[in-house]
Length: 287
Image (cartoon, rainbow, N blue to C red; front, top):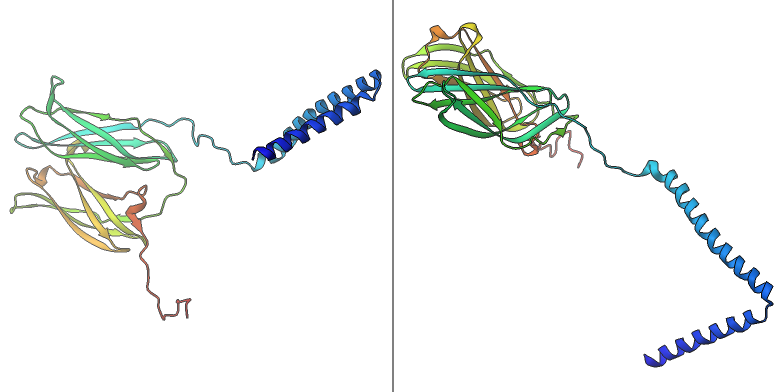
C-alpha cells in the first residue's frame, strides 16, 4: 500500500514539474494572456451553470409536486340549540345541537365536555365527556340521556377539549339510511312512553355501526326527551325494527317525535362492500 502511494505521489510531482517547465517557455505577456483566458473560462463556466440551472428549473417547475395548505381558514362550530328535559324527580336529559357551516371540511374524534349548570351557575351534576365526528355542512346532536341531579338543571355549557383538526373532504361514500316515521304510545309495563319504527340501510355497504337519535318534542317545539342507541353490523339493504322507551314521560305531553340515523363516513373501517362468490356463474371471469 505504501509503495502504491509513493508511486502516485511521484507521478503527481512529475506532472507538476512538466506543467511548470512548459509554462516557463512562454514570454511574460503570453503568460498573462493564458492566465486571463483561464480566469475567463472559469468565470464563463459558473455563469453558464447558473443560467442553465435557472432555465431547467423553470422548465420542470410545472412538473414538480408541491405541497400547500388545502384550506386557509375553517369556520367554527355553532351551538344551535340546547334543551334540558325533566324526566321525573331529580332526573333530566339534555340535547345539544351543533352545526358545521364548512361546506367541504369534516372533523373526527373531537373530544368534548358538557357541564350541567344550576340556577346560580354552579355544576349541578357531574360533567359528561365523549368524542364525536361531524360531516361537512351538517348538523349533529350530542345527547346526555340520563342526568341525576338534586338541584334543578337550567342550562348546559359545551366545551371542546382540544383544537379541532379539520380535514378537507371532496367526496365521501354515498350511504342512504332511511328511518320510518316513528309511532308513539303510552305503555304500562314498564311504564313510560315508547317509540316504534324501523331503519333501513339502503346502500350496498356493510355498516359496522349505525347510530339512531330519538327526539320527543313538547309544546313550543321544546325537546322533552332525547336518547340514542346503536345498531351494529347492518347488511346491505337490511331493515331493522326498533323500540325506544322513556320512563317518566306521558304521551299527552308529546306533540311530535323524530328519529334519525347516521354513520361515520370518515372511518374507513366502518364501511365495507361484501364480497360476492360467483364461482362457476355467468359473472365468473376465471372460467
